[in-house]
Amino acid sequence: MIGVLDSGIGGVTVLREILKQGINAKFVYYSDSKNNPYGDKSSDEVYSIVKWVVDYLLDKGCVAIVLACNTASAICVKRLREEYPDTLFIAIEPAYKMVHDYNPKGKTLVMATEGTIKSEKFLTLFNKYDNKNTILLPCKGLAELIEEGNDVKINQYLDDNLSKYKDIDNVVLGCTHYPLIKKKIRRVLGDVKFFDGSLGVSKELVRQLELRGITFDNKSFSVDFIDSSDDASKENRFKELLTNGE
Image (cartoon, rainbow, N blue to C red; front, side):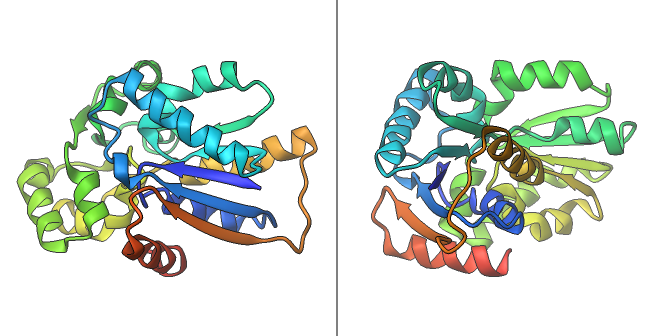
């Protein structure tokens, strides 16, 4: 069984890419919307929350856990790997290196939570690949609006916060919720190039499973959804997004 952990339903963007890799495993997706957002919490608080979810997923029988939340990955993955050396952790990270690889001279906007932008893990990545033409934008409250699914509020937020960046070439989506609103971002910024870490995470999961010799019964594929808030509407939206995208 493979666990996928996110602070809400945004990690569905990661799970979609993972499922394209053809891994015939049982998946359990844990949406921690009760504690959403992670991005404005202290590092210790985020780690305590994530550790509880990890223990829960391990009790369910997971042999690998994907941290599909950029904030959780940035703050927790190093410590988790030390504390759970026998568990495979795959962590997403903002895809800033992809800008360096594919469009290094373009003016770049990194959209992420404050927790991600301030994290040591992200700052190390950013300082290594900084193209000297990048704006770091903490998008406080955006993940919650996407979680809520209120299009009017989302569009107003984007108008208020992105309108002054119409000369942007690249947009790094540093939160797994943000790929769910690409069309809305394009409405404000125009035909920008998007970069996110979902594809890289899916490929790394496949690579690590192969390296460790972890295989699954090819008849055992399923996706179970758990939401910490017990909001029944979350599962319906999750299934719709998993199948149909934005």
